[in-house]
Structure formats: C-alpha cells, structure tokens
Image (tube, rainbow, N blue to C red; front, side, top):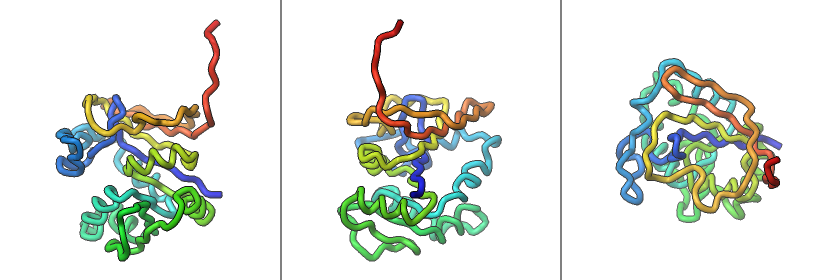
Length: 202
C-alpha cells in the first residue's frame, strides 16, 4: 500500500487559504491572499521541488485543480515544477466536475471517495495532495492520510480556511522531521499515529 502525503503552506494560526496569490481564493471575503511570498526564504529554495519528485500521482480537490490547471500548462519551461506537474498523473475528487478535464494526464475520481483513494494508494507508492482543504478534511476523517508535510510561516492572519478547522478528527501526530530556517519558517513532517488517549497529569 502506498503513502498519501498532504502538503500545506500554513500560518502560525493554521490558515492555509490562498498562500500564493492575492486572487487565488477570495471565498468568504478572504482578503489576505498572497501572504506566503513575502516570507519565503532562499534557504529552502529547491527543497519543496526535491520533496515533490518523490510523488507518483497528484490528488486534488476541484478548486485547487482549477487554479493549477489555469497556470501550469502555460507556465515557463524553465520553472522546475512545470514539466514535472504537467507529466504527473493527476486525479480530481469532485462531485461537481465532469469530463473532459483540460489539464493533460488528468482524470476524475469516480465512486466512493474511500474506495477510489484506496485504489490510488494501492497503485502508486506516493500520492500527494496539495492545498485542497475541503478534500483534506474528508481524507483525514476517513483515515486515509499517512503523512502531513507542513510549511509553517511566521505570520498570523486571524481569518481564513484552516487546515484543522471545525470537525477535525482528534489524532495523535508523530513528528518525524523538522527544519527551522533563519527567517522563522518551520518545516514540519508528521505521520498520523491514531486516536489520542486521555488521562490526568500527575
């Protein structure tokens, strides 16, 4: 069985909405889009791409797919991600999308989400989910996420969609890797370790 890894760029207060561009996702009146770029560190240049190269397939929600499909097929070839993402097998989890999908090597997941994602994990060694916050909540609830790859930036926004919002399934996370960069950016990799237990201190 393969591994499903969720990669998110988040603030200290857990917001993962629209990190890359001011108009990326303005749902619910979100006005802080593009918060990530001013906080990027040259120290982590290439690390995200290096990690991504372990990916065999990409699983996206409808909104993130639309954003990616509107950019990467037309992106400059000198960007390392361009050729990689365009050639990668891509799957879209959506009840509102219909074929055909415009981005090359893309197809719609059909049927029950747990069963269809389970088939992906049996077919590929490393399935990656990027963004796709609504989808991520469903995957966490179904126990299908194996690893959380989090890039946490030194900023709080106080509003926006959070990675762990209302309805999050209680879980214990094992920290398996961490890196702190000079500008306060923290890279955290967790594996899901199951439900928590509870007791009294002392």
